[in-house]
Each structure stands twice: as C-alpha cells, then as structure tokens.
Length: 132
Image (tube, rainbow, N blue to C red; front, top):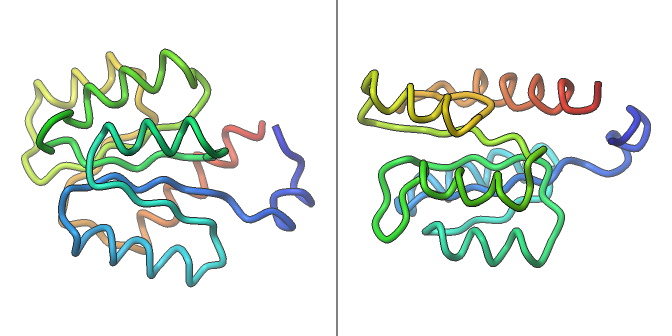
C-alpha cells in the first residue's frame, strides 16, 4: 500500500478491458487526461498478459465480451491478484450478473451508459479504500 504523497507522485494505473473500441478510447482519453497511467485490452486474455507484465492499481472491465467475459476475468484475476480492486461494467444488467459479480469479490458493478465523472469518483474511492 502506498501513502498519500506516493499516490500523488505516482499516479494510479488503471487497466480498462472492453471489446468496444469507443469505450476503451473514451476511458483512455479521460483518465490519461487526469495524468493516470492507462493500459487497455480488448479481451480478457490480453488483460491477463498486461497484469503479468506491469503493476496495475485497479481493473475496470466490461462483463459481456467474446472469448472471456468480465466475470471469468475477475475470477482469474482474483487468483493471482487477490487485493486488486475490480470494477465491472455492463450494458445488460441483471440480478444474476450482479450476484455473480459479488461472488467474484468485485469492488463494484456499474451500468452502461455511465457518467464518466461519477466513474472517476468511484475509482478514486476504491483506490482510497485500498490504501487504508
């Protein structure tokens, strides 16, 4: 865990996983504009490769993706990075999906379309919780 001065000096790193290029680009542009370190992946396998190669502070993933969905990704991530906060996004909300997300110990679950400023506040809050 990093103290506040280190967090300010070393901006957070976020991994965005979504099969939609528009969402990846939107989130990349927004968070890089905040000075954050951003990595993007279009699927779960590429996300796992990135997690293997670099330090990530928070993972933001779509749920509905080909090859490996966000629920499977979060489950795999928790095996190797149990303390990494995972936030799942979905355009297809359901009670079953929300329950599955909670069972996978995700930090939060948000519904698309979302307000990017509210997402930013949510991520900041999860990073602050992680520091505590």
